[in-house]
Image 1 (cartoon, rainbow, N blue to C red):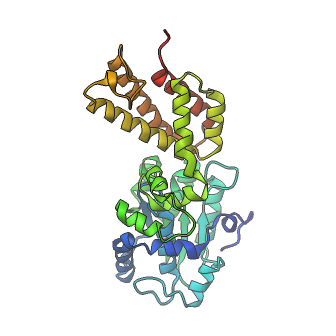
Image 2: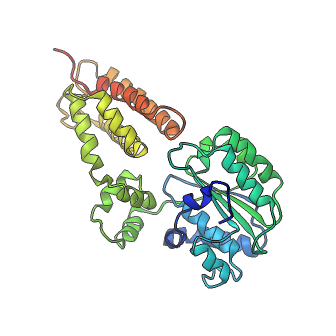
Length: 345
């Protein structure tokens, strides 16, 4: 890594070898082939946006591309044997830069981007390409985005900026217009489970994969966070809300401190299924799947359900930014209790 005042890039860079191994997943083969072809033809742009659903492999593919660009004997991928490949895998390549959210921070700051731009403006330490990965790119604040523009507009020779994003809607149009976009596909459930089943230590992959929205790399991250029991925990909160016993503050605090994005995704998935069941149910009065949808006022409940669904989707766009996450969940908890709680008798 290139030196920085606070040594931030070193602290944030992931272990390269596992990232490269993940990037070799079979369903990403067309993506790898396209990148290798662009590299061989000299048509790879200086600004590239690697986008897809959260956990689709943005960071993995970005790292794979960095290895390809830094390798001195590239083919369909990096050779893994040259000095540059070995330096990268050891986490010591001076022309590879990784920018992410610092510990105890919520955003990528302008200072981080300025230091990156200064490093990229210098000559290559190894006499080859210089590559920077910003992940997740949507975590940059507006000042950081503005600072990045000049580097995107006037890149130094043999310099590549790779933005890994799971939320393209959070990126300014000025950034999007200066990058070639590469969309990452998700595998089929069968492909994902086949890949996950080869990993050690878990027998709950179907549950984690469903929680991750069929994104296998996100399922691996969830496994590392110990979220196998999240489904039961969240369903317990729903049941408590139905009974009028949900402690809003305690629930919001727990959600804010432990994987808030995963919990919002669970709530959105649960509510979407519930509303779909409500639309298809022939007799809502006797539908035991939806105890909170009962006359009188079924139509009003369904409208309220769609209102809460909009709240959840807005929350998923906002979470991880500068907002107070606990207050966000407290508001959602109140809306949830109002929706599913039993009416007063």
